[in-house]
Length: 251
Image (cartoon, helix red, strand yellow):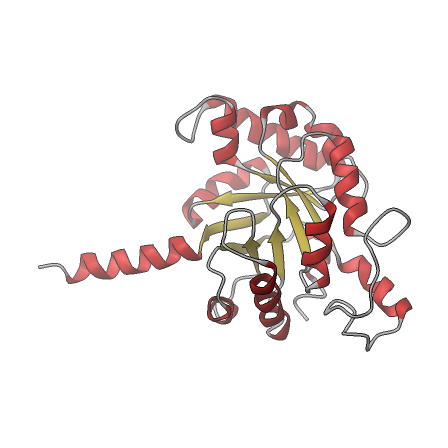
């Protein structure tokens, strides 16, 4: 089972490759499940996913045993709850600025006092077909990833990475570039930030995740210690494939 073993692979530092899903259609999930990717990350922060579409796409991912993370719209607990109840293997939470926010995110993603609410009528709980103890045991599968994409988060990155229960830090190079006042990728400030994130992850034992535009850039970023790569997106692959065909067929 790929979904059940996903968190263990992340913790081991296995090299895992996925992509962002921004198109809210189940056929996209079906196609990507055939691709050999290790996971997908449904982007409800920037994609047009309402709760119904998110639920349907997660149902398809679960049915095909394709590990599906959800990047939620912000650090609020209700969005985390809804993504996990619908069957996400974990969440990517944007704009985590400090350790206190990271602790709130971790609590919201796990059962316990003051944490994730419990209900048996969810996909996660097998629609009331599983005992409470079994549902609670499955909590150990939940992946929690904090996205560090602001200069203030970089200043606090060592404390963020050390928060117990945080499985990985996700570098947001585009947001970091904008945050540092840049108009393109590749600045020294962002390169330094990426290195600092990698050092913090190694020190704390957290995995290091990052978005990259293509596999060539992924090879370059391995030097920072990145082991989890979100490569491009369904939009990007669709456009690139169409553009390549158009170019080859031009007179």
